[in-house]
Image (tube, rainbow, N blue to C red; front, side, top):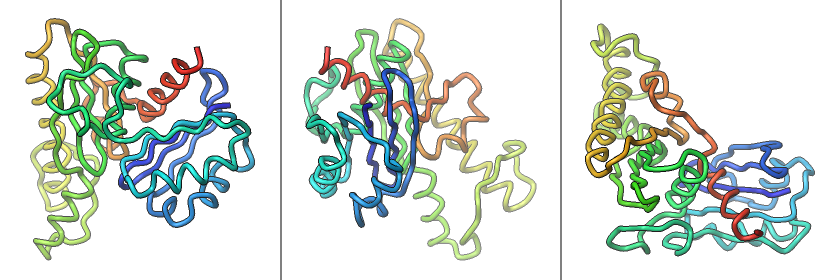
Length: 248
């Protein structure tokens, strides 16, 4: 059994694989994981064992505690932490590979292994990342924006009358009341942003882009993007593919 973990700023996802099959999965807040990594993992795994694990970690301070928690739970010794800027995970054509987050590396690897290339990836989380995997299968660059949760909280802090609102699936772009206007602005706004970047990135490629959406906030926008493939486990698939390549 192989355990893949994607530890983000806000949410941590995990998947237990038997061969190519996802046997079980979990999602917990990164804050809960950071409080007591060993207890949190034991709870989520429910007694299931694994012989190898790779975890992509964007919170640098959590890398060592997470590895220390994984080692006693692993029946083997193959525990690896994927950190920012690691080389050999994906080919790249960018200015500074050391700046690339572990989550981006896992997304790119998952997209390349699962869908091929070129590909446009919209990863909607604490930050929204619009990522280009080029015609040659290399990482070509990306754009970063504030995530939906961050943006809605910021608006609530600055506009007291709008504090505590919830995003609901908008019926149309033109809102008729405050709730509809806010949901339309944030969710249709995200849709148009995603489509705009996809169109802009397409100009960098000769072949049609595979369109992929992932991330914790993706389900809010997925209904508005029918041409996109929603893959909530894209990063986990990337870690699984990395594990396969290491053990060929």
